[in-house]
Length: 355
Image (cartoon, rainbow, N blue to C red):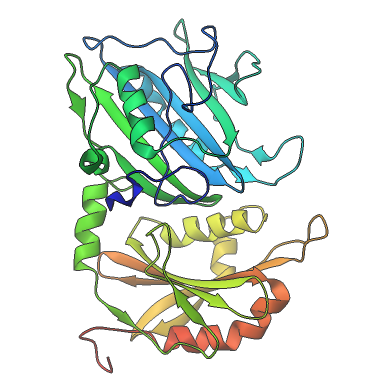
């Protein structure tokens, strides 16, 4: 992960920034009452902190789990599942939804926290806290250093951020994950190795460096822009509606067709389907001399908004999968469908025939 996060304000642009901060407060200008503050952990105690920040609209959402290493380790998979289930519907009373993992219990209500969950059978139980704030929520470095103090670690410099934080692309939008451990004695662990959905930053950077250069024929009217999150290789702004296309390369994953189709269905407010149904929704298309997987998904209209639609192509190539996506209102996507398909079929890689 590039350290573009350094000094960045966490408000609305993840993928490149998402880290949560809190010692006695979640943001520099907000005081948490003592009854709501998490106790600081002595340097001699072993503790692990998982935190995710998701900027959305004019707010930033903070999700944090901290506690003894063994107990947090047991909840890591459930934490990942919970974060991946987060969706924003922007309803006034309940703007965010999620799927609560088995065994998690609603914690005490609070005027400060948006939500609290108690995890595990031990006493006192672990707590996962959810906060949301509007406006400036502090820099990445400030937030991380508050967290480090919380688990008994010393401050770090900006050039060290990449060791304990990484960008994520969740279905609800870009986010940043922080994972740091104090094994006792004040010694911190770096980010863990790659996982199916959350590869470590060192793995990402090595693969990015070896990533082949992609070339294509840009459709008329499409405007190339950079991805502020740093995740996508290129993003295209397309006239005639709130429609965008993107090209992204990520490490290959097991069962990625099944998993990504269901993630995309979730983005469009569609229910997940089984492998048999996924097989019916996916068709094959040839891209750069390789068989790719192509889906065309349309979600329901909601709250007076037009039905969303997404065209997605997954191209496995070496250790990576290339994702080509077009998303926007259904009518606008339909007008660009032939251009999108021609664009995908024009893709070639440096060194390949026709490049």
